[in-house]
Image (tube, rainbow over all chains, first blue to last red; front, side):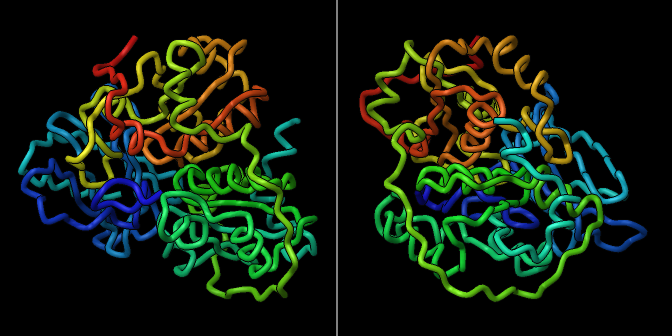
Length: 105
Length: 280
């Protein structure tokens, strides 16, 4: 049950998986969540497709970071954090690009 | 079987902290999450190191499961409460796995670690010590686990539920979008499978939706024929364990199997049919 080559599970490490060596062929959406300039360490970032469907979710990293490996197109990053925080941002991703999303809650 | 037989809420966990006969277990996709803080009294099971054979692609065998639970101090009579992050998907996988080896007194903490965190409940770093036990497992319950030949034979005959995201189902992504996209396998889905993403069964806070909503989702909207047997699959069998839990434990469908080989196996088989696109 080790998954496919180069991948050892469906798991979502806090902050998102590390950048792979072939990052040039990925459509990456990544960023950080902050509150008053301080990293939000407890919370979740989820990726929704252009139909609003859930695609993936990661716990925020120690630096408030998250990373997704999407496909070219329009995506929504939704941040959930304690205190009923829910914040959406729409982004466009493309192969070979890193789309940065900085979220302040 | 009612929801209270298979789910507990956070208040229940807080009220039963330290109860003999109740073992709280965190099973997370991020296996380091437990070490950064966990629910008081919880022990950890690592879905990869503890539950997978280190060489073959398969589960640990019966003796291995017995050794694991004995070492962790879990008895056959204990009530095991499982929880984890991201809508409990790995906890649901562990739940299915415990049932596979015959442990029936097992429940999920509804909402799991995510709801616990979002509610700002206490997390601790203390690791409890539990005396070793002599756990005795049953043989794997074959009625809960589908293997590849059975899946191929089920095309067009049984309900096949592909619980991956719409983009993975259609073949636009090969892995969940929190992981680098792979190149090695074919993309797509098993012909005749219905796409009901696992996450649709959960609210944003990770709790399961009400039964009526779940019935609408699977039976009315997706068109599953509840008169037929069902096989759920995803990419490696963890998200589909979540859907197995919904169909088998919450909606009480009698014959539901999880295909843990899932797309990483099916999408690499030679000669089997594959469909692309969004489906019906």
